[in-house]
Image (cartoon, rainbow, N blue to C red; front, side, top):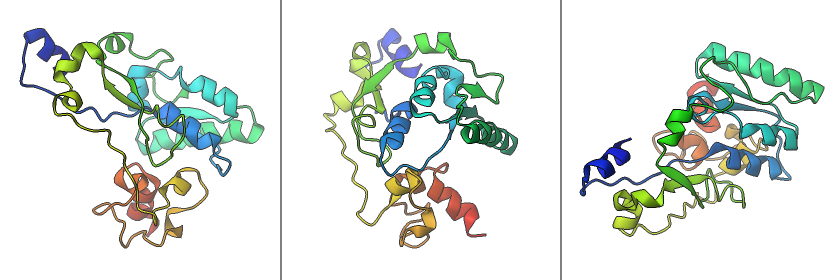
Length: 213
């Protein structure tokens, strides 16, 4: 909205560097891995409130995994886990279900109309594949005068995690965070080495905060 207003009001000295990512391409990348052990997903309720859960349905059907949209409260997560486990055991994935009444299949159409971003190619979350390279967004062309990436000639940022970081294996369910030699030592929420420790919602950050106890 700030970008939209800047364009509307003719503000010239305002720009943003967009770092938003898309979830479905990253999920597809994880599920396509031969090493993948992930059997279900809890989808992001705050995102789906705006975007809906339509894009998750083909993934659930194609890979035969349940995807349940949840909130962040403990009861939401528990209910989402229950809704995931039941169809996973019966091999009858039930995608697109939500534990929140504010999430619909099509999302908030008004908010979508006002969106100022579109997809771009970028590697996301330490999982490199054709799918995950489409997992980021950029400002649409008509808002290019407020695109910091263009104005300041920001080169394509190629994030490289350290060789001793196993966040990609953690994302695919192959390894647990405590299997990493750096976990809790060189790698902490204050000094993260990989995506799963950078995000407070990441597996390594969760294990660090709660698993040690």
